[in-house]
Length: 76
Image (tube, rainbow, N blue to C red; front, side, top):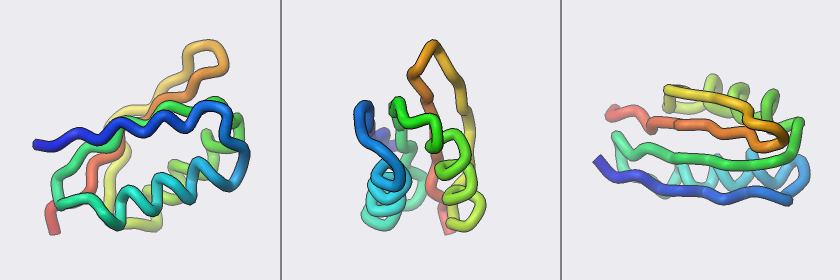
């Protein structure tokens, strides 16, 4: 399986969610996006984006100001 790292640290809302959406649209089915960002609104925006798309949120975490998300694009 392919993994795509997205370093979105320093970007402000709505840019992290827009970049994740663009990456999901261009990714092959089964691809894992590994997202790192610092915008606190991403904790709301990215899970909502995943819920509305054909993807699944496999992991989300916070370490200090850093938010991480592992998003898998669905195979279908």
